[in-house]
Length: 398
Image (cartoon, rainbow, N blue to C red; front, side, top):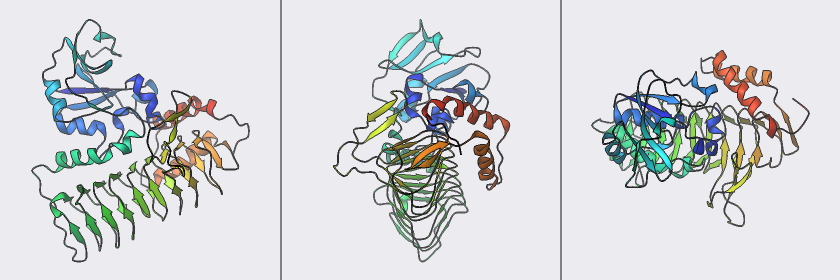
C-alpha cells in the first residue's frame, strides 16, 4: 500500500469533541504517537486525511488513489494482516462500522463502498469511540508504540550517577535527553524519553510513561503510569493516567488524573482535577452528540480540555468536566461541568471570550515557542467560534 487516507467516521467524530473541533480523528495522540503516525510507522505508506471541510486545508488529502482507513482505528499487527488481504472490490467492516476500503482520487466521500463485497473482521479492533478512551487505552498504546519505535535500536545510556532506573531494559532514552537525580520505575511498563526532553531533579516516574520530544518534567514531579506528555510541554506536580497532546503546560503543583489535555493549553499553579466522585458512582461526561451528559461507566474520570484553553491559579475542576476550545477559566469555587468553547469566567458565571481577543492571545502563546498562527488556522478557530455559539447562552462579553 503506497497511500493511506485516514477518514473521519461521522458516527464517531462527534463523540470525540472537543478534540476533533481542531483536528481529524487520526491526528489525536494516544500512547506515544498520533494515530496517523502509528499507521505511517507500521506500513511505511504516505498518510493523509479525509476530514471536515473547514479542516481539510490544514490537513490536506494527497492526490491519487488510496486505501481509506477509519481514523479511529488503533492499528496493530493484525490490522496489517487484514489490510494486505483486502482487494479493491472489497470493504472491510466491523459490524456496521466501515474500517477500510479503496477509494478513487476524485471521490470525496465513501459512498463508493456500495456494491463492494463486505468482509467482516474476524477479531475485535481497537477503536477510539469516546474521549475517555484516550486515557483509558493509553497504557496499552504506550507499550505498542514503545515496541514500534525502539525495535532494533539502542537507547542512549543514562550517565547520571544520581538517577535510579528500575527495569532499565524497558527504558528508552533518545538523543539529547537529559535526566538528573530522578527515579524511573519501568517494572509495570516501559518508559520512553524523547529527543531533547528533560527530567529534572527529584522527579518520580512510573511506567508506562512517554515524555515526547523537547518536553520537561519539572523538579519534584510525581508521574504515575499510563501517562503521556506530548512534545514541547512542561509538567509538574502529580499526574496520573493522563494524556497531554503537546505544546501545553501544567508546570506547577496540583493534581491531574484520568484526563486529556489538548494543545496550547495552560494550567495555573495549584490547579486540581477531581477524578473520583465522593459516592464512588460512575462519572457522567458531557456528550456533544447527545447534547447532554452521558454515563461513562467509569469510576475514575477527570478533565477533558480542548485546544487553547486555560485556567488560572487554584482552579478546581469537578469530576468529569469538559472544557471546549479557547476557554479561559478562573476564580474561586468549582466551575460548571460543561464549559463551552470561548467561555470566559468561572464559578460565578461566564461571558464570551470575544474572537479578536482570543486570536490576540493565541498569537502571543504560539509566538513564545517561536511559531506563528497563519490565516488558515485563524479561519479554523473562527469556524469553531460560530459552530459553538449556541452553547454560549449568556449575553455579556469580556
